[in-house]
Each structure stands twice: as C-alpha cells, then as structure tokens.
Image (cartoon, rainbow over all chains, first blue to last red; front, top):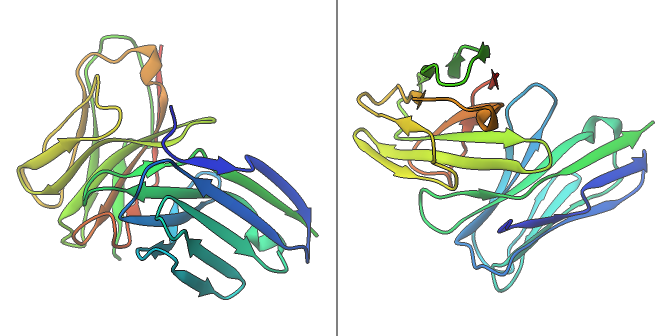
Length: 110
Length: 113
C-alpha cells in the first residue's frame, strides 16, 4: 500500500501548456517535498512545504500544501522541454522517516 | 566539491554472496539515508541515521543492515542478497533531517542473479 498517491502517472504535453500534478494521502504529514529526477541521476529537491495552506512559487512552478496537510499539488505554467523528468512527492511524519509517491513522468514536446 | 559518493556504481552478484555498498559525504551532514528505487514503485526508504551511532528502520529494512560509525560514512550491507533486492539504490545526506535539502548520490545499480 502506497502512503502517497501521485497522479497522473504519465503526462505528455506540448511546449507552452500548463499542467498540474497531484499528491494525495489519508495521512497527515509534518512537511511535504517535491523532487525532480532525470534519467541516471539522483532526485533533486525542488521545494519543501511545511505549513497547511502554504503556497510556494519557483519561477514557473507553483507548489501548494493542503490545509489539512494530507495533500499537495505542483502546477507548471507554460511548460518547456527542459521541464521533462520524473517528479516525485515525498512526505515525512517524523524527522527521519520519509515516504515517496510513485512519481509522475512528465514529457514536454517542442 | 560538496558531494555524496557511492561505490560501486554497478554490481552484478549471485544469491547469498555478502556485499557492501559504500556511501560517503564530505559536507559534515548529520542525517543520512538509504533508498531503493524500483520501476512503478518510486523510492522507498531502507534505513536512515540521524547522527553517528543512531540508525533506524525505514519502510523496507528487511534483508539490509547499516552502520554509522563515522559521520561521513553510511554503508549498506546485504548479508545474503536475493534476486528481489535487484534494484537501484540511492544514498542521501542532509544537514540535520530530511526536511532540509537532501543531497543524493549518483546511485548504485545492483543485479542479484
């Protein structure tokens, strides 16, 4: 059983389109992170959100943490081919344990 | 250069032959963790360590051992590897906890025959 459910699993879009990736759970997390991973490399942290209702923006990426701290979303505006990669959400309930979603494979075509 | 290194990067072994995957970081980080990544399953935490001599189980610790005798090193030991431990393994470190930026190593691809 996966503690964090990510959707969609695959996303294939054209350059310039907007997209949203969702990360949902029935558990409450103290914080939630989003990572991006490229083939053959380790994940790279994009953002950490810690407060329910928190919204963080990173250029064209907007991250939101649900009010109840059980879910999160990643919205990308005007996607570019360089955004292509595997996006992973991860939630932690203690300072040590970390649970990852299965990931969303995003492909942005020129 | 600040980094997390893993060795070996690729390993093919046979069932039951003990192996160790090393992980080392040069950033004086307190928190270190091991993950395995399998297609369709994302990353799953194996073990983590909050500091020297402090280790704890993650989501999938069965069949693995770790030790943290020094701050910089966090080796992953497979005492008797089995084919279901074939996977891509990542080591990561962060200053205090996972809530800070975790720096991931390049990964170790393991095949157990």
